[in-house]
Image (cartoon, rainbow, N blue to C red):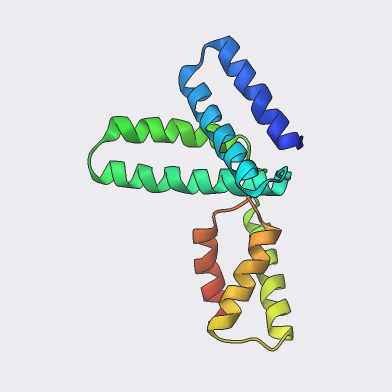
Length: 151
């Protein structure tokens, strides 16, 4: 079992002992998503694949929070924010602005060295960055920075 899956399982046990029902619900939902992916693909997921699932869950929560806040449903938005905080505990430490900038510069240089320019360069740079910064930064914010660098 991957280290990340073990951490999630241990957190579920801790939440059960502490009777933290909201936290427990979020963790169980995450564990179910991981198990579903393993069953669908008939494989044992690595930490990187588990991180990708967590990132997807985080993105869904962010979108839900924005939608609920727009609709004036502050109570529901607050619940989603609490779930987001629980999920973020399992992501790697966030990359610093300097690390992000250096990774973008390196990826752009690599893509230009391959002779790729224009719109295809954006996709190649983002693919490199997705691997380099997995779980450490928000990809939607990253794309704006990459566009600025490429133009």
